[in-house]
Length: 231
Image 1 (spheres, rainbow, N blue to C red):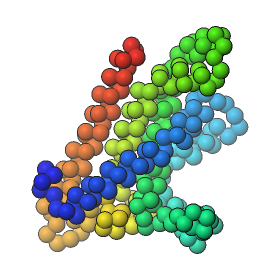
Image 2: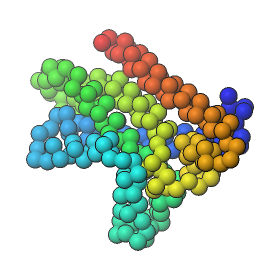
Image 3: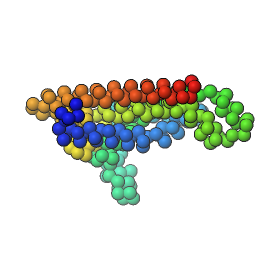
């Protein structure tokens, strides 16, 4: 299939893979922290934090992209601060596409981590505590290995979902060839062009194949890790 793609389509594939990979790598540390807080902590504002984390799942993706654009435009307080102190300008850039993708897939990652934490036997953590293990030791030696299947499955699911992000990306990062034109945006462009039906079909089939591979790998990897852990 790849040999039939044009250079521009291959570039869109490359951008999709890079942006999806960077988005999950960027989200993972924060997702572990937020997932742990939601699963194990009870504090004022837990419900509000839970709703805020999952808000991108129920908002129109275009609305998410618009809010990012308004909040991080160079004329906004946050955008001007990033530009002045770090030289970072996110709208209409590859970094912006990565951020928009990360925001849209973050709830999937948090949910997978939270479910994995819920399945961890707290009795093992209590036993480690009675043996003198501190909170960090218990997390690294007991909790983290037991929740690893959920983390890996969440990563692959979020990665597969990131490959298909469209509304938030095109609103916040635009549709710039070679910069932010990912597979979904390339597919949209092909549909709009006269005679682009063949290109649109190639890109649609490729998108379906990538999504299926990601979901199957997530399930297989989770099963393998569960077997290694004897669960």
